[in-house]
Image 1 (cartoon, helix red, strand yellow):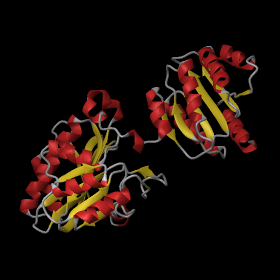
Image 2 (tube, rainbow, N blue to C red; image 1 turned 60 degrees about the horizontal axis):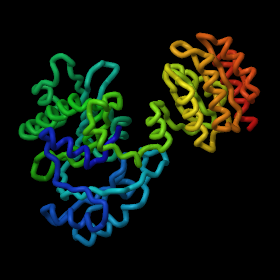
Image 3 (spheres, rainbow, N blue to C red; image 1 turned 180 degrees about the vertical axis):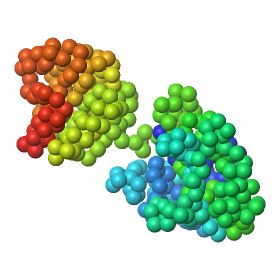
Image 4 (cartoon, rainbow, N blue to C red; image 1 turned 135 degrees about the vertical axis):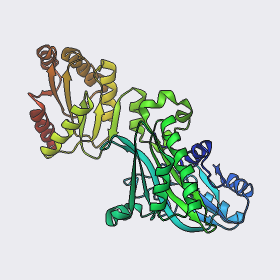
Length: 388
Protein backbone atom coordinates (compact mmCIF):
# COMPACT_ATOMS: atom_id res chain seq x y z
CA UNK A 1 0.00 0.00 0.00
CA UNK A 2 1.28 3.44 -0.96
CA UNK A 3 0.96 6.64 1.04
CA UNK A 4 0.79 10.33 0.27
CA UNK A 5 3.74 12.55 1.13
CA UNK A 6 1.90 14.23 4.00
CA UNK A 7 1.09 10.81 5.48
CA UNK A 8 4.70 9.68 5.13
CA UNK A 9 5.92 12.81 6.90
CA UNK A 10 3.48 12.21 9.74
CA UNK A 11 4.94 8.72 10.18
CA UNK A 12 8.44 10.20 10.18
CA UNK A 13 7.47 12.72 12.85
CA UNK A 14 5.97 9.94 14.98
CA UNK A 15 9.40 8.31 15.04
CA UNK A 16 11.36 11.41 15.99
CA UNK A 17 12.44 12.38 12.49
CA UNK A 18 12.21 16.13 12.02
CA UNK A 19 10.22 17.32 8.99
CA UNK A 20 9.42 20.88 7.84
CA UNK A 21 6.18 22.38 9.12
CA UNK A 22 3.28 21.54 6.81
CA UNK A 23 -0.45 21.03 6.56
CA UNK A 24 -2.63 19.25 4.04
CA UNK A 25 -5.41 21.19 2.29
CA UNK A 26 -8.33 20.13 0.14
CA UNK A 27 -9.50 23.53 -1.09
CA UNK A 28 -7.79 26.81 -2.07
CA UNK A 29 -9.16 28.42 1.11
CA UNK A 30 -7.75 25.64 3.29
CA UNK A 31 -4.43 26.07 1.50
CA UNK A 32 -4.30 29.76 2.44
CA UNK A 33 -5.23 28.99 6.05
CA UNK A 34 -2.49 26.35 6.13
CA UNK A 35 0.06 28.87 4.84
CA UNK A 36 -1.01 31.39 7.49
CA UNK A 37 -0.33 28.81 10.19
CA UNK A 38 3.22 28.21 8.94
CA UNK A 39 5.85 30.81 9.88
CA UNK A 40 7.79 32.56 7.16
CA UNK A 41 7.08 34.19 3.83
CA UNK A 42 7.84 31.30 1.48
CA UNK A 43 5.70 28.20 1.04
CA UNK A 44 5.78 25.10 -1.13
CA UNK A 45 2.49 23.93 -2.68
CA UNK A 46 2.78 20.22 -3.52
CA UNK A 47 0.20 18.08 -5.34
CA UNK A 48 -0.55 14.88 -3.42
CA UNK A 49 -0.57 11.81 -5.65
CA UNK A 50 0.96 8.35 -5.28
CA UNK A 51 3.92 9.05 -7.55
CA UNK A 52 7.26 10.80 -7.71
CA UNK A 53 8.34 13.20 -10.41
CA UNK A 54 5.70 15.75 -9.44
CA UNK A 55 8.12 18.64 -9.75
CA UNK A 56 8.81 17.96 -13.42
CA UNK A 57 5.06 17.60 -14.04
CA UNK A 58 4.23 20.98 -12.50
CA UNK A 59 3.02 19.59 -9.20
CA UNK A 60 5.44 21.52 -6.96
CA UNK A 61 5.25 25.32 -6.81
CA UNK A 62 6.99 27.95 -4.67
CA UNK A 63 4.63 30.68 -3.39
CA UNK A 64 5.71 34.00 -1.91
CA UNK A 65 2.23 35.37 -1.15
CA UNK A 66 -1.08 34.01 0.07
CA UNK A 67 -2.59 34.85 -3.32
CA UNK A 68 0.00 32.64 -5.00
CA UNK A 69 -0.75 29.85 -2.55
CA UNK A 70 -4.44 30.12 -3.45
CA UNK A 71 -3.70 30.30 -7.18
CA UNK A 72 -1.40 27.27 -7.22
CA UNK A 73 -3.73 25.18 -5.04
CA UNK A 74 -6.70 26.08 -7.24
CA UNK A 75 -4.73 25.10 -10.34
CA UNK A 76 -3.93 21.66 -8.92
CA UNK A 77 -6.99 20.58 -6.93
CA UNK A 78 -9.63 18.72 -8.92
CA UNK A 79 -7.27 18.02 -11.80
CA UNK A 80 -5.28 14.92 -12.73
CA UNK A 81 -1.56 14.48 -13.11
CA UNK A 82 0.71 11.99 -14.87
CA UNK A 83 4.43 11.76 -14.17
CA UNK A 84 7.19 9.55 -15.54
CA UNK A 85 6.37 7.12 -12.71
CA UNK A 86 2.66 6.67 -13.51
CA UNK A 87 3.15 4.90 -16.87
CA UNK A 88 0.84 7.32 -18.64
CA UNK A 89 -1.96 7.02 -16.06
CA UNK A 90 -3.34 10.30 -14.74
CA UNK A 91 -3.94 10.33 -10.98
CA UNK A 92 -6.48 12.64 -9.32
CA UNK A 93 -5.24 15.51 -7.15
CA UNK A 94 -7.65 15.69 -4.20
CA UNK A 95 -5.29 17.42 -1.78
CA UNK A 96 -2.18 19.56 -1.65
CA UNK A 97 0.50 19.83 1.00
CA UNK A 98 1.51 23.31 2.10
CA UNK A 99 5.03 23.25 3.54
CA UNK A 100 7.37 25.92 4.78
CA UNK A 101 9.91 27.03 2.20
CA UNK A 102 13.55 26.16 2.87
CA UNK A 103 16.87 27.30 1.46
CA UNK A 104 18.59 24.22 0.03
CA UNK A 105 22.37 23.99 -0.30
CA UNK A 106 22.52 20.37 -1.50
CA UNK A 107 20.18 17.44 -2.09
CA UNK A 108 20.93 13.92 -0.85
CA UNK A 109 19.12 10.62 -1.31
CA UNK A 110 18.32 7.98 1.31
CA UNK A 111 16.08 4.92 1.14
CA UNK A 112 15.37 1.73 3.09
CA UNK A 113 14.14 -1.48 1.48
CA UNK A 114 14.33 -5.26 1.66
CA UNK A 115 17.19 -6.56 -0.48
CA UNK A 116 16.30 -10.16 -1.27
CA UNK A 117 19.69 -10.86 -2.83
CA UNK A 118 21.37 -10.28 0.54
CA UNK A 119 18.31 -11.24 2.63
CA UNK A 120 18.60 -8.05 4.62
CA UNK A 121 17.10 -4.65 5.22
CA UNK A 122 19.27 -2.31 3.18
CA UNK A 123 19.95 1.42 3.18
CA UNK A 124 20.76 3.04 -0.15
CA UNK A 125 22.20 6.55 -0.12
CA UNK A 126 23.74 9.04 -2.49
CA UNK A 127 25.31 12.47 -2.25
CA UNK A 128 23.49 13.30 -5.50
CA UNK A 129 19.79 13.32 -4.66
CA UNK A 130 16.86 15.05 -6.33
CA UNK A 131 14.68 14.44 -9.33
CA UNK A 132 17.37 12.71 -11.40
CA UNK A 133 18.42 10.02 -8.90
CA UNK A 134 17.61 7.27 -11.42
CA UNK A 135 20.03 8.86 -13.87
CA UNK A 136 22.70 9.07 -11.17
CA UNK A 137 22.31 5.35 -10.44
CA UNK A 138 22.54 4.47 -14.14
CA UNK A 139 25.41 6.73 -15.17
CA UNK A 140 27.51 7.14 -12.00
CA UNK A 141 26.85 4.06 -9.82
CA UNK A 142 29.97 4.84 -7.78
CA UNK A 143 27.98 7.69 -6.18
CA UNK A 144 25.52 5.18 -4.70
CA UNK A 145 26.31 3.91 -1.19
CA UNK A 146 24.78 0.67 0.12
CA UNK A 147 24.50 -0.58 3.70
CA UNK A 148 23.17 -4.08 4.45
CA UNK A 149 21.92 -4.44 8.02
CA UNK A 150 22.49 -7.71 9.86
CA UNK A 151 19.06 -8.99 10.87
CA UNK A 152 20.29 -10.19 14.29
CA UNK A 153 22.45 -7.24 15.31
CA UNK A 154 20.22 -4.58 13.78
CA UNK A 155 21.36 -1.15 12.67
CA UNK A 156 24.42 0.04 14.61
CA UNK A 157 25.36 3.68 15.26
CA UNK A 158 28.83 3.23 13.77
CA UNK A 159 27.26 2.08 10.49
CA UNK A 160 25.26 5.29 10.33
CA UNK A 161 28.42 7.31 10.98
CA UNK A 162 30.36 5.42 8.30
CA UNK A 163 27.62 6.07 5.76
CA UNK A 164 27.42 9.74 6.71
CA UNK A 165 31.15 10.31 6.22
CA UNK A 166 31.01 8.38 2.94
CA UNK A 167 28.43 10.94 1.78
CA UNK A 168 30.83 13.76 2.64
CA UNK A 169 28.91 15.08 5.65
CA UNK A 170 30.53 16.90 8.56
CA UNK A 171 30.39 15.67 12.15
CA UNK A 172 27.22 17.57 13.05
CA UNK A 173 25.41 16.37 9.93
CA UNK A 174 26.56 12.79 10.55
CA UNK A 175 24.92 12.96 13.97
CA UNK A 176 21.68 14.18 12.41
CA UNK A 177 21.83 11.47 9.75
CA UNK A 178 22.37 8.80 12.42
CA UNK A 179 19.21 9.91 14.24
CA UNK A 180 17.24 9.84 10.97
CA UNK A 181 18.53 6.38 9.99
CA UNK A 182 17.85 4.85 13.41
CA UNK A 183 14.34 6.29 13.35
CA UNK A 184 13.69 4.99 9.83
CA UNK A 185 14.96 1.53 10.78
CA UNK A 186 12.59 1.37 13.74
CA UNK A 187 9.69 2.66 11.64
CA UNK A 188 10.47 0.15 8.88
CA UNK A 189 10.28 -2.81 11.26
CA UNK A 190 7.45 -1.76 13.53
CA UNK A 191 5.12 -0.82 10.65
CA UNK A 192 6.11 -3.73 8.35
CA UNK A 193 7.12 -1.44 5.52
CA UNK A 194 8.41 -2.44 2.10
CA UNK A 195 10.07 0.84 1.14
CA UNK A 196 10.97 4.21 2.63
CA UNK A 197 12.51 6.86 0.40
CA UNK A 198 13.74 10.33 1.34
CA UNK A 199 14.33 12.32 -1.83
CA UNK A 200 15.51 14.85 -1.25
CA UNK A 201 17.10 14.58 2.14
CA UNK A 202 18.47 18.11 1.97
CA UNK A 203 21.37 20.00 3.45
CA UNK A 204 20.02 23.48 4.15
CA UNK A 205 22.04 26.67 3.91
CA UNK A 206 22.39 26.68 7.71
CA UNK A 207 24.12 23.29 7.46
CA UNK A 208 21.35 21.16 8.98
CA UNK A 209 19.62 18.15 7.41
CA UNK A 210 15.92 18.27 6.53
CA UNK A 211 13.53 15.65 5.13
CA UNK A 212 11.87 17.62 2.33
CA UNK A 213 10.05 14.77 0.62
CA UNK A 214 9.26 11.20 1.55
CA UNK A 215 7.73 8.08 0.07
CA UNK A 216 6.47 5.10 2.07
CA UNK A 217 5.15 1.72 0.88
CA UNK A 218 3.84 -0.90 3.32
CA UNK A 219 3.56 -4.68 3.02
CA UNK A 220 -0.07 -5.55 2.21
CA UNK A 221 0.38 -8.98 3.82
CA UNK A 222 0.84 -7.26 7.20
CA UNK A 223 -2.13 -4.91 6.83
CA UNK A 224 -4.15 -6.84 9.44
CA UNK A 225 -1.58 -5.79 12.04
CA UNK A 226 -1.79 -2.09 11.20
CA UNK A 227 -5.34 -0.71 11.07
CA UNK A 228 -3.84 2.77 11.45
CA UNK A 229 -2.06 2.37 8.12
CA UNK A 230 -5.10 0.83 6.42
CA UNK A 231 -7.10 3.90 7.47
CA UNK A 232 -4.68 6.01 5.41
CA UNK A 233 -5.43 4.15 2.17
CA UNK A 234 -6.56 6.32 -0.72
CA UNK A 235 -8.25 4.02 -3.22
CA UNK A 236 -8.78 6.89 -5.68
CA UNK A 237 -5.05 6.67 -6.36
CA UNK A 238 -5.31 2.97 -7.24
CA UNK A 239 -6.50 1.06 -10.29
CA UNK A 240 -10.28 0.57 -9.93
CA UNK A 241 -10.15 -3.04 -11.08
CA UNK A 242 -7.35 -3.89 -8.66
CA UNK A 243 -9.32 -2.34 -5.80
CA UNK A 244 -12.39 -4.41 -6.74
CA UNK A 245 -10.23 -7.53 -6.88
CA UNK A 246 -8.85 -6.95 -3.40
CA UNK A 247 -12.40 -6.81 -2.04
CA UNK A 248 -12.87 -10.41 -3.25
CA UNK A 249 -9.43 -11.59 -2.08
CA UNK A 250 -8.23 -11.88 -5.67
CA UNK A 251 -4.69 -10.97 -6.65
CA UNK A 252 -5.06 -8.83 -9.76
CA UNK A 253 -2.72 -6.51 -11.66
CA UNK A 254 -3.82 -4.64 -14.76
CA UNK A 255 -1.56 -4.94 -17.81
CA UNK A 256 -1.75 -3.57 -21.34
CA UNK A 257 -2.37 -6.69 -23.45
CA UNK A 258 -5.56 -8.26 -24.86
CA UNK A 259 -5.56 -11.82 -23.46
CA UNK A 260 -7.24 -12.14 -20.09
CA UNK A 261 -5.56 -14.65 -17.74
CA UNK A 262 -7.22 -16.57 -14.91
CA UNK A 263 -4.83 -18.83 -13.04
CA UNK A 264 -4.52 -20.37 -9.57
CA UNK A 265 -1.15 -19.77 -8.02
CA UNK A 266 1.20 -16.83 -8.51
CA UNK A 267 4.01 -18.95 -9.97
CA UNK A 268 1.72 -20.58 -12.53
CA UNK A 269 0.24 -17.17 -13.35
CA UNK A 270 3.72 -15.77 -14.09
CA UNK A 271 4.55 -18.81 -16.23
CA UNK A 272 1.24 -18.44 -18.09
CA UNK A 273 1.98 -14.84 -18.98
CA UNK A 274 5.47 -15.80 -20.13
CA UNK A 275 4.14 -18.52 -22.42
CA UNK A 276 1.53 -16.15 -23.89
CA UNK A 277 4.37 -13.72 -24.70
CA UNK A 278 6.41 -16.53 -26.26
CA UNK A 279 3.47 -17.42 -28.48
CA UNK A 280 3.31 -13.84 -29.75
CA UNK A 281 0.46 -12.62 -27.54
CA UNK A 282 0.21 -10.09 -24.73
CA UNK A 283 -1.49 -10.66 -21.35
CA UNK A 284 -4.14 -8.17 -20.26
CA UNK A 285 -3.71 -8.93 -16.57
CA UNK A 286 -2.19 -10.98 -13.81
CA UNK A 287 -4.98 -12.75 -11.93
CA UNK A 288 -4.44 -15.38 -9.25
CA UNK A 289 -7.73 -16.83 -7.98
CA UNK A 290 -5.89 -18.78 -5.28
CA UNK A 291 -5.67 -22.42 -4.39
CA UNK A 292 -9.16 -22.50 -2.89
CA UNK A 293 -11.00 -21.11 -5.91
CA UNK A 294 -14.80 -21.29 -5.68
CA UNK A 295 -17.62 -20.66 -8.15
CA UNK A 296 -18.16 -17.21 -6.66
CA UNK A 297 -14.50 -16.24 -6.97
CA UNK A 298 -14.27 -17.56 -10.52
CA UNK A 299 -17.38 -15.53 -11.42
CA UNK A 300 -15.87 -12.37 -9.94
CA UNK A 301 -12.63 -13.11 -11.77
CA UNK A 302 -14.47 -13.23 -15.11
CA UNK A 303 -16.16 -9.93 -14.29
CA UNK A 304 -12.81 -8.31 -13.50
CA UNK A 305 -11.22 -9.56 -16.71
CA UNK A 306 -14.14 -8.43 -18.85
CA UNK A 307 -14.23 -4.98 -17.26
CA UNK A 308 -11.60 -4.09 -19.86
CA UNK A 309 -12.76 -3.56 -23.44
CA UNK A 310 -9.27 -4.51 -24.61
CA UNK A 311 -9.72 -8.20 -23.74
CA UNK A 312 -10.25 -10.27 -26.91
CA UNK A 313 -9.81 -13.75 -25.43
CA UNK A 314 -9.50 -15.43 -22.02
CA UNK A 315 -7.08 -18.18 -21.03
CA UNK A 316 -8.08 -20.12 -17.92
CA UNK A 317 -5.15 -22.20 -16.67
CA UNK A 318 -5.95 -24.22 -13.54
CA UNK A 319 -3.94 -26.85 -11.72
CA UNK A 320 -6.28 -28.76 -9.42
CA UNK A 321 -4.24 -29.56 -6.36
CA UNK A 322 -6.09 -28.13 -3.38
CA UNK A 323 -9.27 -27.62 -5.38
CA UNK A 324 -10.77 -30.29 -7.69
CA UNK A 325 -10.89 -29.74 -11.45
CA UNK A 326 -14.55 -30.76 -11.66
CA UNK A 327 -15.42 -28.08 -9.11
CA UNK A 328 -13.45 -25.52 -11.12
CA UNK A 329 -15.21 -26.63 -14.31
CA UNK A 330 -18.60 -26.13 -12.66
CA UNK A 331 -17.50 -22.66 -11.58
CA UNK A 332 -16.30 -21.77 -15.08
CA UNK A 333 -19.55 -22.96 -16.68
CA UNK A 334 -21.70 -21.06 -14.18
CA UNK A 335 -19.56 -17.95 -14.51
CA UNK A 336 -19.61 -17.94 -18.31
CA UNK A 337 -23.41 -18.21 -18.23
CA UNK A 338 -23.89 -15.58 -15.52
CA UNK A 339 -21.46 -13.03 -16.91
CA UNK A 340 -22.55 -13.73 -20.49
CA UNK A 341 -19.01 -13.93 -21.81
CA UNK A 342 -18.80 -12.86 -25.45
CA UNK A 343 -15.09 -13.43 -26.08
CA UNK A 344 -13.43 -16.82 -26.76
CA UNK A 345 -12.53 -18.80 -23.65
CA UNK A 346 -9.68 -21.33 -23.66
CA UNK A 347 -9.45 -23.66 -20.65
CA UNK A 348 -6.61 -25.89 -19.56
CA UNK A 349 -7.27 -28.11 -16.55
CA UNK A 350 -4.82 -30.46 -14.86
CA UNK A 351 -4.80 -32.29 -11.55
CA UNK A 352 -7.40 -33.86 -9.26
CA UNK A 353 -10.54 -35.08 -11.11
CA UNK A 354 -9.26 -33.57 -14.37
CA UNK A 355 -11.18 -36.03 -16.59
CA UNK A 356 -14.46 -35.23 -14.86
CA UNK A 357 -13.73 -31.53 -15.23
CA UNK A 358 -13.01 -31.81 -18.94
CA UNK A 359 -16.18 -33.84 -19.48
CA UNK A 360 -18.27 -31.15 -17.79
CA UNK A 361 -16.78 -28.47 -20.04
CA UNK A 362 -17.28 -30.63 -23.15
CA UNK A 363 -20.96 -31.23 -22.38
CA UNK A 364 -21.70 -27.65 -21.28
CA UNK A 365 -22.89 -26.54 -24.70
CA UNK A 366 -20.80 -23.39 -24.32
CA UNK A 367 -18.14 -22.09 -26.68
CA UNK A 368 -15.27 -23.16 -24.43
CA UNK A 369 -12.10 -24.39 -26.16
CA UNK A 370 -10.21 -27.12 -24.28
CA UNK A 371 -6.41 -27.16 -24.16
CA UNK A 372 -4.10 -30.13 -23.56
CA UNK A 373 -1.36 -28.21 -21.74
CA UNK A 374 -0.14 -24.69 -21.01
CA UNK A 375 1.59 -24.29 -24.38
CA UNK A 376 -1.43 -25.54 -26.31
CA UNK A 377 -3.68 -23.25 -24.31
CA UNK A 378 -1.49 -20.21 -24.91
CA UNK A 379 -1.36 -20.89 -28.67
CA UNK A 380 -5.14 -21.21 -28.86
CA UNK A 381 -5.71 -18.09 -26.80
CA UNK A 382 -3.32 -16.03 -28.92
CA UNK A 383 -4.93 -17.32 -32.12
CA UNK A 384 -8.40 -16.51 -30.78
CA UNK A 385 -7.35 -12.99 -29.81
CA UNK A 386 -5.82 -12.36 -33.24
CA UNK A 387 -8.91 -13.69 -34.99
CA UNK A 388 -11.12 -11.41 -32.89
